[in-house]
Length: 291
Length: 283
View (cartoon, each protein chain N blue to C red):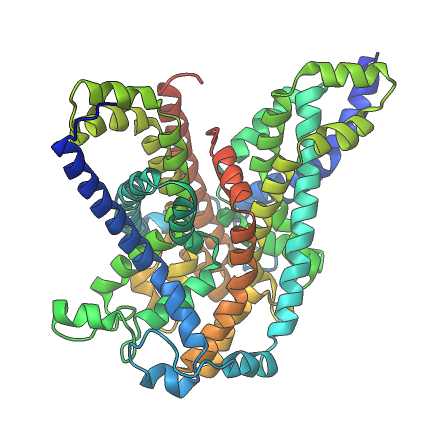
């Protein structure tokens, strides 16, 4: 049998590549991020230690407040509506059988595997002010064609809508797996007792799918807090200040304003926010009981 | 089952048919933007804007595709995307299998600490690290190289978690029997554990590949010249160059989306499995 020492040696070899990459690309940059946030360094180069000055600046920074607000607004527009839509779609898809189910599921899931730039180009075409097919939908409702990427009230809701279109396949799959885990006997028993469809949904499906709903909500919440790609792409060429989101502000300060120290302070803020929500997610998921 | 026809049963079937119809309509609406992009890419630029909302191209042509292939770096971007995505996939899955195996099957000092660190890093937003990734890559002169694009994208703690949990669930007897026969740990991992569970490896590999191909933020920062861009980053550049030439822009988009769309359509079950596994639900 293997001695403990032999096992330790083998284990060291096996975990070495991962630990090396992990230390270099995760632990080290995390430490550096905190260090950098305490300096006035440019993106590349030395700076001097300035204590918590960057954080004091952060608290008073109107654009940072704007970025927090826009990110929260985006989260609000995507998380609950998206999860509700995913549940509705999963309920519809789970009724179907065989190849029809696979076909319909592919239609709903396919956008999820597309690169963000494809999603961007595709929806830019859909909403084009002159030739976009969506203008035919918007015009009767709004009374005129709208350049949704340049009119502020339209920007976030439109980006949220296509984000739901793009990312919802993930939640749909989780809901479908959850629905499949509900024993069929429960529905048979309910139908023998003369339960209506609505009763079957509200008394069986909803309570049993609730844990998956919580999982989807929290995964989406954390995912959408880190929004960058779509907002950046659709806002490019316009007044990006007014649609700024958190990750974009890191990018903006580091790569546009060459202010590495301040960008790192924003990154620390994002880090803290996301970790706080993740701990919150972990607690919520734990409440539903050990699995 | 009763032989008496039940009127409420017939009504129920009508309802079911309507619901199925509604589902199909929703699926068509959901798929429409993709269809519309494909149709537009098969037109010429003039036709794309003059055809109005006609749903089928009158004279389908590949001219927009040919134009993009001849007048942009898309071939090079494709090569870059393929090289980086394949390497990211192979390295990530290999490291995760080794690390997951060690944590699951071996007892060694630091095991618990390592496991908890991996679990904790699951919640860290990689986007917060972009500034320091950039600085590190600049310091070792790897910006605008394949290594520079690949290295920060190898952070996938979730693949380690999936492997560890999967190996945990396998019967201990395999391991004990193989060790009795004199197999080494490496043989066990590469000849028994991984081949026995190709499904998990395939699922994780496909989802890692799709993720790597689609990555935008880091490759966008790391590639400073057009020659080093991945196709995902590159096609947003074509658009700047062409202005409102939608057929060409969408031809580029279709080409960029094709490999991942195919990967999904061919390996649907594996993609589903990978997603439910990484979210912690047994599907």
